[in-house]
Length: 123
Image (cartoon, rainbow, N blue to C red):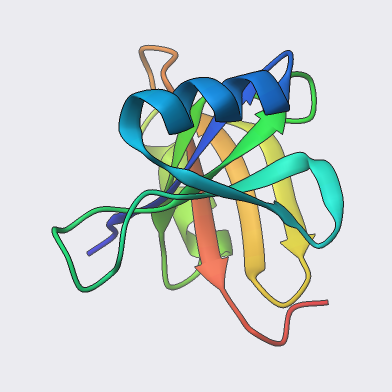
């Protein structure tokens, strides 16, 4: 069963958003892979309450805006099911090195979501 595994928040100013979310929720941030406009969001210790971590991205770098990513075993099979069930693929398979493969979709009502197939060997 797929679970929400990650979130992305698209913003105009990542540093300003980090200050806001850090001030409101106490979230911590760090640049991912040296990219200042792509901030990892740490929402808490994995041993604490259930929850997920995510990222803040500069608006325009995400093809769908703010979105939750859902873990799937097979990205390709899941994309087929999305279309079969009336959804739309917005951005096809993309490799995130050392993380896995992602794609972005919309449900039949137009709501965005992402899919992630984790693979530490992705390149």
